[in-house]
Length: 521
Image 1 (cartoon, rainbow, N blue to C red):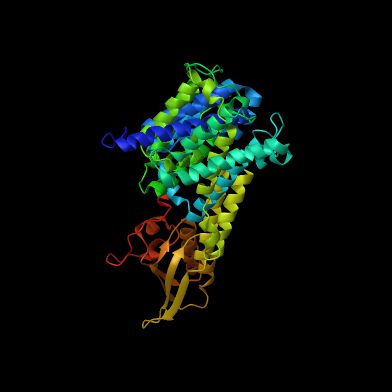
Image 2 (image 1 turned 90 degrees about the vertical axis):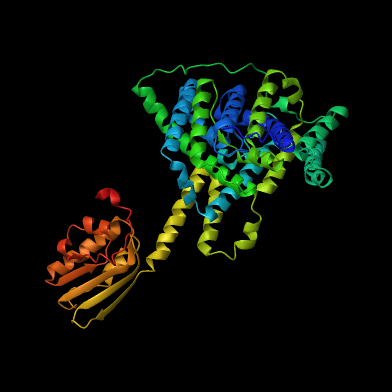
C-alpha cells in the first residue's frame, strides 16, 4: 500500500521537502475555496488535510496531491446557501460512496476515452484558471472581486486593483520568487527551489518590515483536530432527494479531474497510476471527510505539479503535505499566517507556465482542423464553466467528429456473378452515421431476382447498423427478391429479426467480432 522507497534516502528527503512546499501552497487555496463554497475556512483546511492524507495512503497515483478544489466549491455554493453546511457534509458522504462504487465497477478505465486534443485543452484551460485565481491577489482586500479571481463568477473584471508602491512591491516579490524557482536548480537541487523561494521572500518581508499582504490577511487558520460528526440532517427520503443530484455532480467532477490529473502525472513521471484504485481512494477520502466536517475534494493539478516538479514522487510526499497542513492548523498558525501571499502567487505562476502546453501553439496548424477546434473549445469551456463540463463537451464533440468522418468511409461495390446474382460487397463500418449512405446504395426494384450482400469487410458497430440491415432485408422481401446476407457475425444473426432465414452462415469465413448491442440479445 505504502510506497516510501526506504532504500533511497534522497527520495525520502525529496518527498518530505516537496510535501512541505505543497502544504504551504495548500493553505491559501483551501481557505479561498472555502470562501467560494460559503463555508468556514477550517472546513476547507480540514478537507485538504483528510482528503490529501487518505488519497496519499490508498489512492492509485503516488505523488498526486488531493484536497479542496474550486471545481467542486462552485457546485456547493447553491446547496450551502439553500440548505446549510450540514447538508453539504451529507452530500460529501454520498459523493464518496458513489465514487467507491465507480471504482468497484471499474469505471476508471473510461478515462482512456478522452482524446489527446481534449487533454491538451484541459491542461491549457486549467492553467488559465489557475492564473485567473492568482490575479485576485493583486486587488484590494475587501473588494467584492477579491479571492474569486474567475470569469465564471463575473467578478474578476470588477476587481479594484492595487496601485502605486503596493502594486510595485507585490510584483517585485512575485518576480523574485519566480526567478529563484527558475534559476536555483541550476546551482543545486538539494532542496526544492519553491520552498527556498518561499523562505527567502518571507525572510525578506519580515526583515525589512515590508507592508505586503500575508496569509493571515485572508483568514486565521488556527484550529483543533477535526472531530467525528454525523451530519445533522433528517435521515429520510426528502433529504436523499435534495442531496442526490449534488452528490452525482460532485462525484463526476471529482473523478474526472482526478483521473485526468492522474494521466498528466503519469506522463511527467513516465509511470502508470491505477485509475480504479484512485476512484476508491477518492471515495473513501470524501466519505470520511464528510463525517469529520470537511467540504470534500479531489486531485489538485496545481499542487500536484508543484509536488512532482519539486521531486515528490512517492506516497510520502502527499502524506507529508497533509500532516504539515494539520501541524499548521494546530501549532504553527502564527508562522504560516505571516508568509507573504506574493511568494505563493509566484509559485503558482511557475505552475501555470509549467502546466500550459506551449507546444499546442506550434502544432495547432499541423493537426486536423477538428482537433484544433476541440483543443480551443475545451480550453474556453474550462475557463467559462468548469473542468468536468469542458471534458464532457470535448469528448462529445470529438466523438461526433469521428462519427462524421467515418460515415464517409463506407464503400459498397456491386457486380453480377456467373450465376446471374447481384452481389454487393460492403467495406467499412456500419453505424448510426453511415446507415443513410448504406441504404441509399441498394435498389430492390432494379436488382436481379437473386441478391447477395457480403459483409466480410464490414463491421456492424451499433443498433442503428443492425436496424439498417433489418430494414434492407424487409425491402427485398417486399419486392419478392431472394436475398442472401453472408459473413455477418453471430450477434447480428441473432438480432436480425426480419432477415430470418436470409442470413447465411459460413463457418470458416464468418468474422468473429462483437457489436455494441450485445445486451439486446
